[in-house]
Length: 306
Ligand SMILES: Cc1cc2nc3c(=O)[nH]c(=O)nc-3n(C[C@H](O)[C@H](O)[C@H](O)COP(=O)(O)O)c2cc1C
Image (cartoon, rainbow, N blue to C red; front, side):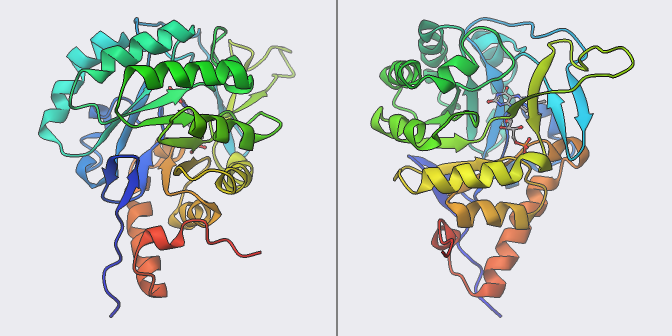
């Protein structure tokens, strides 16, 4: 019988007891899933995007099922930083699971403000900075695809907190390595790859776009090979850890990300069909490592051959 593998990983100073979190926006703020999943088994919880002020989001329809995935243009509705701290943080006092709060802003100053507001509560363990939402007009995609604007956001967030910051990269850039390196140079603790991919679907009878926002972000199994390539490319140039995501439905999917160079992974769209996917992924990684005689999940990171 092989020894139990060491599943612990570190994202900056954030210690995760296993490498699996959930992708922002696919797991609510946490409490919604507490009856379905033992939250304390997760490596971390990543919550839906929070801005400095409350935000309403886009009109409906906001989601549309596609072949091997889904389109969404939710538009980042949320209670704002103060609302989040008041409404959701007390719930987490009963849990040990690390909490990663995903943040976004319409301006560089907005990113700074939301960072300041979430720097204060001790229960917030890390911030994931969304510079790559394809579904909000202001900021969003622009900050993730223009390297100078990108740097200004990372600098601003870094200047307002000592907590680990994870920069969530946009997939639709010519060279992901430039953005991963820029994040590292600006003092980010990690990057996460990838956000949903800008996409569109049209109803041929009405000739109208299927989403009220017209365009949205594609997620699910369809994007996994794109995400694997981006993680692999980024892993060749940065020393900071990468959190990989995009179409993870099984432990085999997660292992592929880890071999490509991801230190941790996030389960996203799969939560909508099976909320316990992340737990299955944790168990599957552990038994695969044990079967291969690999002592620690860290030993597998970036071990792609050829
Ligand atoms: C309905 C929905 C809402 C999302 N909301 C956010 C969000 O608030 N912030 C963010 O950074 N990413 C958000 N994402 C992107 C996911 O976190 C993830 O990066 C993407 O869906 C790829 O992973 P997946 O294919 O496993 O879903 C959202 C995705 C979906 C499907």
